[in-house]
Length: 433
Image (cartoon, rainbow, N blue to C red; front, top):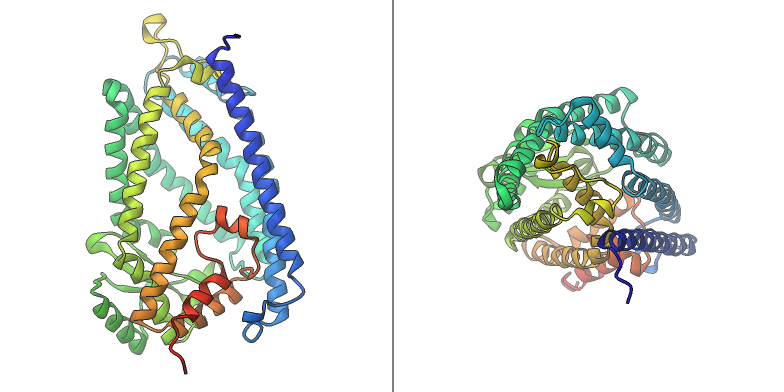
């Protein structure tokens, strides 16, 4: 029996997983494109009375355009990941920073993380521009000026420096200072930071990008307050966000945690829906809280993060993990004073793990769709199933969402049930005339 080196097996496993990942995504996208194109010529019978053929065809064209562009992003993403790993990009960057900064245990790893993020950001920048100013613009959704787009980018970079760099420095310090249990300490710090951001984001960060005003419509405000009282939900305020500055897409959401919870409506949503429909959409969101979906998702995120960091804690000590992914590990301090491998391990792990976890994404999507059905049922009890149906049809129409997705594509990617399933589910709860 041939005894293959662990590094070689790692290379083979990663290469095979990446190839299978790309081929599967390509196959699923091709199925979706064919399904949407095949049904482009006719509105599904259940929507024939509410959605015009031209609107249906626009949604099909928008879906196909995004999917085709997504295939280019898929190819670029796979090439970049190969470049960082097996083709030696991360190894070269690490070596260059070691030569420049020397073996400084915290400075060099932090510089490696910042440089890695900066290069990735620059690579992704043209795709973001094209998505906004070509695809979204072509279908009438983009309302951003180039100046606003650059301003948002600048703010994001500044936030990354102000928040991300100290966070990364803290994580790297924990990884170096807390011994073999660093992954547990890091997990605790990451969870504390995540909970803190749930409180700080709605009041300090979101207002940097959008303007939030109290809901001025007295009748709608009273209607919403009555609904929340029936549902036993307390919020810090009802706000309208100027989403129309950037996009014609509409939405409503809850944000914050504990006493900082607030309800936010896009201004585009309020112009598209009437008061009963707005109430029904809000009742759906309240259903997520009533069924503790938010708490369940946070708990699941915490558990998966703990498992992931525990795995990383083991992999970080295995030389084959680095060598098998195209990286030369830094020498231990006793062999020349080189910096630890923590930043290298973290960057490799964050880049490589999604290649493997993609194949369990249908489980997460299925759980999310089940939660959506439960929230719809709650909304039907607390508000009006018919109003929610009407609101969803308007949102599908105005957001150019396809009504004819491929079933297998849905199972992998859709966090919400497709239109036909969702409307049928709600239709069964509409009282007979």
